[in-house]
Amino acid sequence: MLKILIVLLGVLSIAAINTYGQEPIPTCNKAFQSRNVRENDCSLESNNAVKYKIDGRDIFRKYPDESLWTLVRTCTYKPVSIKASPTGTTVIVTETKKFDEGFIVIVSNNSGTNWHKTHESIHKFKSIFFSTDWSFIYIMEYKNSEDKGVLIRSEDRGENWQVIHECYHHPYKMLMTHDGKRIYILELKNATTMTGYYEKGVLIESEDEGNNWRVIHECYHTPYKMLMTSDGSGIYVTEQKDDGTCELILSYSLNYGKSWKHCKLNDEQKTNKNLTKISEDDKYLVIADYESKKSSDCSIVYLKNLDGTWHTVTPEVDSKKIALNLIKTITLTFDSETNNDCIDIVYKDGKTDKQKTIDLT
Figure 1 (cartoon, rainbow, N blue to C red):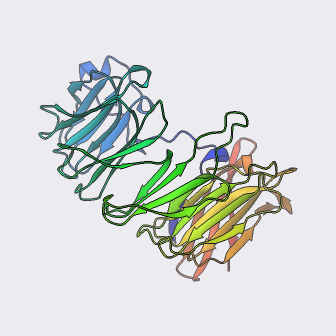
Figure 2 (figure 1 turned 30 degrees about the vertical axis):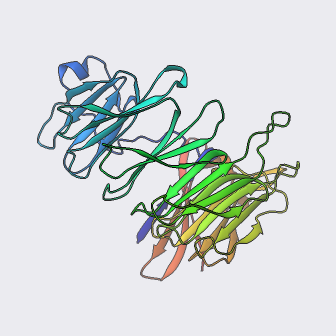
């Protein structure tokens, strides 16, 4: 059976993800071991050639044929992201200053032996994105005083940077295709301080590596989550009404934002904004949410083949619905022998994890 894992966040009890996967704790050198570092205490950047770790302000490196970790840099500021090229030769680190007073980009082109600064900003670091072949690297930063975003781009593996877009509003979410050419940015208008709500969001798109931009969707309500298929053709935005009903609306386009459809997921919605994901093969989009305001039962709403036709299933055991806060993972599966689609649910039953399989045919 071929399984496509879809891990749902939020109340599915997996907010903290171990970035090491199943890798055992390595045999460390004296400098690393003296810190008594556990796996969950560091971030890891890994590829087939070399691995890098962040421990506090220190960066460590380990080659495949080595058993010890080597200290390659002690950062000036707090490192918040690290990314290595497919060969492990080029490494890019972003370091944030105290009190969000800006950040710097540090690059090494010889596997961490030497480092140099390529960018310094007075703005706050938000996120960094890499195309698969590293031909394009994007950093989203935003101005603390105005809360407006600034998108910068590098076309030479982080050596030089240029501003390619200044957001009209707060940059809430950014997505791009693997080649780095198509970019979507979901922007939020200024927050209303009296109510705590954001105004309507605006989704903008670039089809040419950020050189030109256009608005493709204006949200009707407060936007929470944006997803897209791997080629960027399918775009999904969840919007929650801020009128007291908390209804969740899904706005989606199947043609690169040229036209949009909308659907209300439930009559009485009490949903967590993070409970959505598209499978890696673009076959499914799944939303797990509460059935109603007065119930904590789980209702799974899903699109099969992302064709715009919604299906709903409520997991039950012995005629009793499974509460959403007991569900740990939801896995979409395909049985090649029976040609049936299934959903596997792992849930807590007391101190034991149990599994429930739902046939979708």
